[in-house]
Length: 262
Ligand SMILES: [Zn+2]
Image (cartoon, rainbow, N blue to C red; front, side):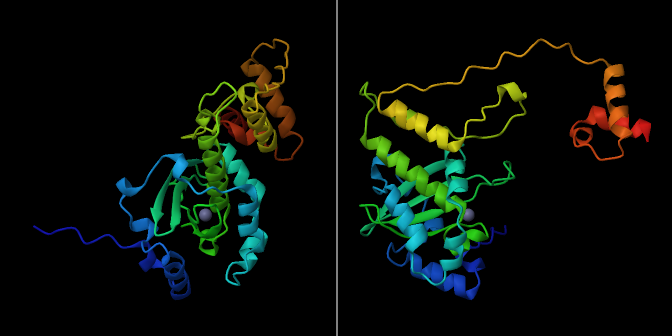
């Protein structure tokens, strides 16, 4: 009976320059983050490094690594923060290795929710100073992709919440954005358009004993569903404009009507 060939290591698929850099980055912890057995990781957020915002800024902005300088400049921190508050970061765990802490997590792709999540990791000192990071996305080879940023923001919040309690003395874990498995189709009135910045303010407010000021739902007039004739008339009106209306591309029903008209 033939046995399965050993699984190829992630590092073996890297080009020479990236391979050397990867080996250099992981030297201090003595293990390859992608080769550590899952059961060795700890999921208690108290064991995360004590990262604060200035540590993230310091890592992203003032790193002097020539290899990462351009990527660091291009880093979009707001995108990373959005990924964090939208629940795209999951499975954040840590491992104490030598005098460092390895943090790993999974972050969903920004445009393709169903694809296998990316696996950024970060090495930091227990006090929160970030040494280096990596991600298996293309930009992550440069060590400062939005997935690394999202993992850093998650770690910062998770650690802070693990140490603090709300005014009711409850543990504050629930303030972390819950992870999102998929994005369902919803009617516009059911979609939460609250920005990342506002969500952050709301979370901070709740933690400090305040309340969240929710906007009242707009009361819309009751409008009857359009009939097939209504829709045909609407499509026809769009069609005669001779410009490509995006609404015509949105649903199968309207597409069928358009096909009949063509
Ligand atoms: Zn990445």
